[in-house]
Each structure stands twice: as structure tokens, then as C-alpha cells.
Image (cartoon, rainbow, N blue to C red; front, side, top):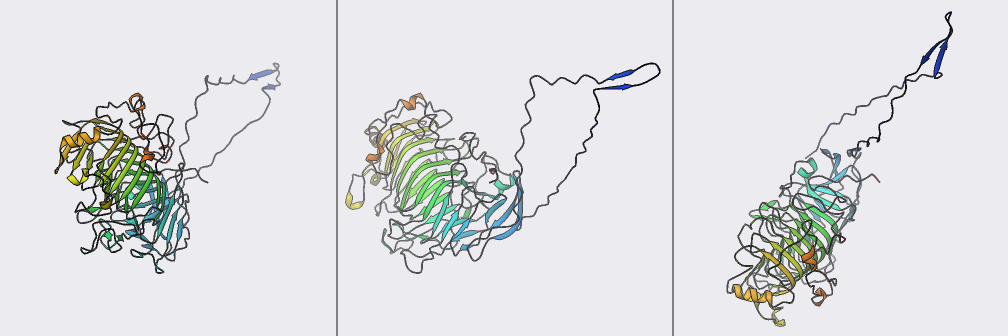
Length: 528
């Protein structure tokens, strides 16, 4: 598609008129001198009026697209105009075959026209055939897409999308550029997918053994094969840092759709931090197998689960804010391990310093934390405010089984310094061979837990008096990945502003004035 616009420059000139002479003009005459006095000047208003603010200049399109190292280059598809200005549209190739950089240039937007692959899939093991492509995206760059478009980083290749707190990288939709979105818009393009070579379960090949090199899975929703999995648990799919992913979740095929961020078999060498998912029509983030280590994650307005972990993923998350919207959503966390509930590796998700804010009643009428499928979980220093729904639901006897190293079983779910404010008849639900009493017993057996907490959070997610009074636990007892913290929740107090700058604001959640602005608008940065 070519984007066309027409701009009309209207120029004007100013004509300055001036006169000179003495303050008084004397004219001779027969009757004597005549004196003409100038009128007294108008006094200046007191106090002086405040000058009207100068509106930011609208963005003007760059003269062309930058040259990149990839042989296919960027296609100049004209311009696109929205409320923040007019931009040159530079469309990415369908596949990056060489390492390339997308620079941040004023008046340039990068477009995905369908699926965009970073490199070619190298299979479950590294080999000389790997393309080793690295896609670098500079701070402040904006990428947009529509429909079935998504970015897929193939095995054996990497992404290097590292923004800054002042200039995050933004993946968003065409309607966001055009100014057509509201705070309830969603599902306008696919999302970002990282595919790696770490272990997974639920293999695509029926005869394959879970966790082996023969066990691969296909990216959910991809119409053509896009595989992940292997046995390289320290695999590196690159880095995402200071990134916003807005309005994602387009249905790609059948009933499958992507979410803002999907990882499949990513290894421990992959780095992710300061990531915001906004208004995904599916999950906020979903992790399939492999390893995920992430600090500073924000999920706002997901229409399915905010966090979804599955197929043997080992996930460590710290400093997590979830704010559901007031329309439709499912759980805040849905956790599973594999279809058979006994395959290895077994999902083990550990989350520290979290603040989860539930919205309207859940679509399935169930609890906000749904733990099932024999997966393992640990929650430390967390807050869950769910005024309409129960807080915790545990399914399947395998999910509360005793620790067993031989089956990669870490034991029943762990709760330490977790506070619940819950709706429903009881905070706890048990199903599929698990009773509500067992769920309650697991929760209350942990230190410093409170199922009768009353929120005094300010600005939706900032700790107030009741939160500050809670006793914290040390998350490093679970993993050295975690920072030692002495407070419960994601945001210690008003002075703790890790969320500021790189986020966007909406009616669901506001992250302050000094950030990228409203999620419904593109940011306009000063020219550099």
C-alpha cells in the first residue's frame, strides 16, 4: 500500500511601517507657534499576561528512506499523515537477510507489510548454515503495522531493540499513527515473536520426546511454519529494552492470535527489561518453554490473560505491574505446563514485587491467578486487588504435588509476603482433584501472607500506608536473578519511579506527565 498526502504551505509576509520625528512638532504661523502633543502611551497591563503556549511543530516527512545494509533495503511507500504530522513510510523487507539498523530519523516511520522475518530459521541446533542476522532498532524509532503483520526473530538470529527511558522504541498499529484509536482499541496487528533453541514440551511431532532436540513447536497463529525449540538453554535471541508494544493481537489463522510479546524457547542469554504491553486483544505476554528473565514489565488492558506461561518455561519476573481494563479480560496469570501434566521440563514461574489490579468481572467468572497443569509457581512480595473476582484458583493434583527432582517438580505453589483483596464468595477455588481448603492451606502456610488486605494504593499502583506496613520476604532465596527488596508490591512509594518516561498513558493507567504521552498518540521528540 502506498500512503499519499498533499500538503499546502501558506507563506505570509509582514509589512512594517515606521515614522520618525521629535516628541513635539512646532509649526510657525502668523498667530504664533502651534504645538501638537502625542497621546499618552497605553499603560502596560498588570500583571503581564502569560504568553499562550506554543504548540509543538507537526512532524514533516523526511525526504527519503535511510539506506540499510540489507540487500532488499527499505521500500519508500510515500507518506502517511496523522495528528502529530506527516511521515515518510519506509517498509521493511519481508525477510532481513543481513544485519541491519533502523535509525531513529525525524519524519520516518518503519512499516511491516505482513510477516517480517529476522534471518532464516536455522533449526533446533546451531550450524554453519545459520544466517546470524541481527536487527538493530535505535532508541525512539517507531514501527507500525496492520492486519496479519508481525515480527518474527528466527532461531539463530537476534534482535537488538534497546530504547531509553527518554526515547522508547514503539511497535504500534497504523490506526495509532492516523489518530483513529481510543483507549479501548485493540487487535490491530500481530505482535513481536522471539524464537529460540531452548527446551520446550508439547512437541509438534507426535513421536518426539519433550525437552529433546526433536521437540519443536510452531508459533501460535502463524499461517506458515515458524518453529522454536531445541536443547540450547543458554541460547540468545537478542535484547528488548525500553519498548512499548501497542494495540496488538490480530487473529492470524483459525482461532489463533498473537499477543504483544511471544517468546518460544528463548534461552537464558536473551535479555528483556522495561517492556510495556498496551491493549492486546489476546494475552499481554505469553512465554512458551525456554527461559525468560525479565525486570520491569507493565501490562495494561489485555483482553485475555495478562501473563501466560506454558510448555515448560522457566520464568523469573520482578517489578511487574498489571492493570486490567473495565471492559473485557480473563485472568491476570494463567499458568500451565504441558498437555499430559507430567512432561519435563516442567513450567516454573517465579514472580517477585508485583502489583496486580483486576478490572471488570473476568470473562470466565473465575479467579485472577489460575495455576494448573502440574506447573510450579512462586510469588513473593506481591499485591493482588481483585474486587470482583476470587483471587486464587488451583487445578489438578499434579499442581500441588510434593517436590521431586526426578520429575523436575519443585513442589506446591509458594506464597511469601503476598496480600490479597478479593471479591467472590471466597479468595480461593480448587478444581480437578484440588479442594478450596487445600488452596487456602497452601496460601496461609507461607510467611507474611494476608488474604484480608485492604488496598490503600495511590495512583492505582503506588504503595500507600497499608502496603508499606506489610512485611517483605527476600526473593533471592528463590534465585540470584532477583534483587533483594524490603517492600511488598511493584512500586515502593512515590519516590520510586522506575515506570516513568518510557511508558504511555491511558484511562486505564497513567504513568505520569514526563513520559511518551497518551497511548492514543505518537510521541513527538525534539529534533536532534
